[in-house]
Image (tube, rainbow, N blue to C red; front, side, top):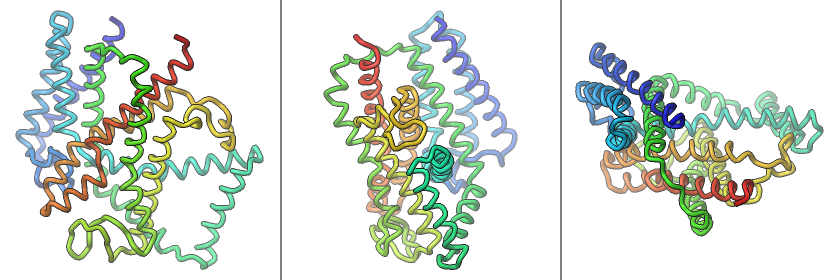
Length: 365
């Protein structure tokens, strides 16, 4: 019974928050972040105005408290209600701003990882640390000496700051609704008590779904990395504001921004393949500190599950954004770049297969 107490306590918190936010939207019209006036169109919430949006959220909060109250007396209806709540936050209130902000967040996270590699590697006199330090020194010395133009870097940082300044509040709302979806999904899973599949099952299909999941990030990674070449692929043409295969007119700062995001997507491809690779179980020996040690199952599964959740949360918004494109080809290209409706479930299945395989190795049957 204790296993069900924590998820339902989470349901109470989400429901009270939904009631408070719904009341705020009704009392303060300018607080509503969605609707046709919003500049973010990648979500079903773009078609929901303040009145219906506040009413839906208030109804969700009231239903959540009711489900919590009756969960012991009527566990079946309570479980079904939890599934309905999770679907509401996932399909209606969430949007793809979660995925885009996550992509931008990978850049400072990568920089932090590089700094960690330099400091720890140099302290331990590891070649990887010295190599990373040399690369950073060259990157800093180039603009400082005038051999490399620092304009694109300054422009990129300016674009990044302006983007978060313009959309920071809107992104926070997206993450809040995604948290609501994740919380209710936790409640639903705990209430339904799903039975795990047979161990042999994931071993048969795990490798296939992992490869397919890794390929989900490949189109976007290829497109954005190509922005560092004279032939940038996939993007909005600044002259026509339409999605095209080959684009032009991109300034150096925009090219740098796209390239760095592409590197983050490429890292997603590599890490996904780690779910079926030896180095996904044991850290490569060239890594400082953790090299040669076993990869913690919980850390790998947690990171993969978080990525799968972000993709699933963004899936309805991707479809909504594709539908809103004026030309059908634009919509098709948009879904090719962000295949979240299939990419998210595939990644979730790949992570599950990895978890089953690692569990059987660490815990004898």
